[in-house]
Length: 328
Image (cartoon, rainbow, N blue to C red; front, side, top):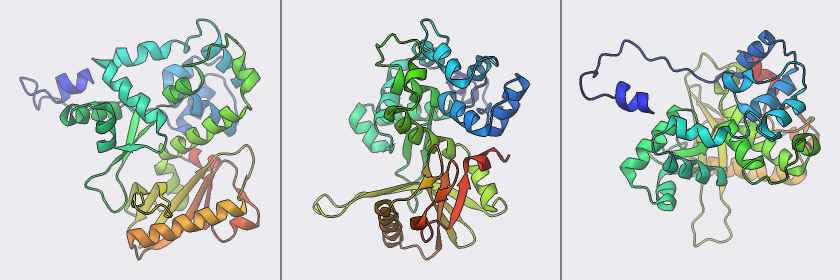
């Protein structure tokens, strides 16, 4: 944020004097795999996906993995052991990057508590941060890949939805911030618990949102002009019978088609229950009704290993699996 404020957006003698900007993005899943191989860590894609959901594509975090330990042992050592290298990282991370980190943490904490994301006005109302200042804070957080924003489908000029994106921060809040167990093997003892399964679902969604180019490639639409957005419908407060809906990823294509994406993590093939099938149908119908789109809607499921059972046949038009996110 200091570089952006003092150098890139300098209003004095450095204005327009930069030769170039180099945006060092986090690794993709494919780049993470290549990096781990170079370190002598030979894991399958499912285990690399789990690693990514814990620490994202941050090379420094990945460099701390020990090739002689499995993933579970690495997580215990780095996060849950006394003085683990990533156990106290959170306390230093935001202070090191941002001047006046308290306000940034206020926003991050808020977005953690609202996994569906919040729009600007909601964040301003809850945090009481003045609009111009809030705009700058959100911009800096997004530049540093802590949060991500998506315009709302059909309303690109306003109403962006902001979501927490940083995997380490999400993992810290979920498992470390209020963990007083002193159990140095906490992950070994809890990695299959309901709380971990819940976190995996949210984290997998974020992995997908960081790999939209790979999703487009797998759908065979890399050569087509597209835009990615979210869609949210909030019912009228006076209508208690009407339910709201949100679609986290809508890919609007220039070939008169829209991919409406459902992102689901599971340890095996994802099974669609009758109730969930009805919910998806209702959401698709509501999307068409409220957006008044005349484009073809392609229901697209992004899952770990694919979708199985009879209830999937008529609502799953396209499938993408975790393996596909490693494509490029």
